Length: 433
Image (tube, rainbow, N blue to C red; front, side, top):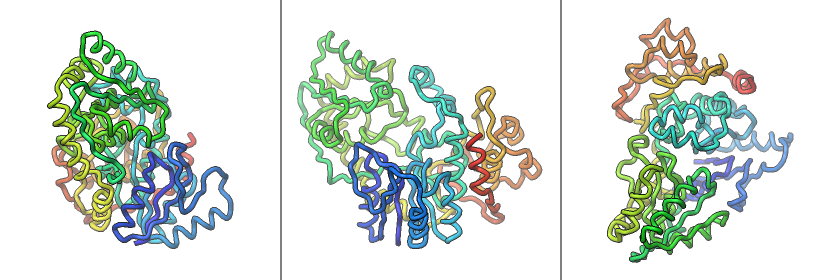
């Protein structure tokens, strides 16, 4: 199969996915529109750093004509502005895989509503408060046009369409698991953004423990290249990643791959899949006591570190991850999904004075007609919140429903699918409002 992957670089992920797909026997073209300065990577096609030209449009037409599958990571960008390429890709009989990776589709206000337990932690952080139309536009375009969507619950608070879990693919041969098993642990904290990771709280907790006689050696790493951080992780006993969010990112996984006991705010009640992740949970309220327990218990650190290697091989080996994605693509729409989103239609409320443009409300309504709703969601109430079009009430019985307790266990009735005909120019106008 001929596969294109692009077009925004996140964490050096594009070449990792490309390498996995090539090992699986596919022909792969890497395309970039937005590079990442931390990852000096060469791509097969490079549109970065310049305005769109006629030559670029012709090159894009060639890409569409010569590839079967298009994998887009970071939902706010694709080959053309405002996702104008999506309908052309679909009309050409090609398939789109959308991979959400974070703030491309995560709205700050909606996220704070969803993460009720952590709201008071999040209120302390200087998050940008973009209008909800920006991430919502990106998400709805992907939901309308993609064969499959890869995401996680914290990224899909605005979502309405069922999706598959996004396991970050990692080339594990690039890491070496080493468990030093020291009595006095070496502790690494390597924030990309100190305010986002909770560095001030972490450092204060470590200082408190030091004053109380808890022994450790701290390696504080900030602004260093990834390869330098990896070398430090291989030599470390403990990685303290972040404490504000009920999830984990790439650094936590790199810590597991290198043999660290990994500390973060990951919570299985908010991110239930996969179960039994080998992290040591902390939050701003319990961080001193939880770190004391970990830093003074050598056997606990070793146990957590030993669990990391098998976990990474099972869930994050890049070839295994991409084989799973391609299997899902082959199975089509009737394959079981991992996540069935419930929050947007069931509980989300727009900020005071903010409204969703009619075109995006229409897109959400079409998706709900096609893919369904959680059982128990009151359609009239959802319409009243400005999230769905009133026309959906005319034939409420035709809207499929799924159980809130069934994550991936329900196959939808596709006997009368609704044609999705919303065009990108309408959504472009909505995004500019």
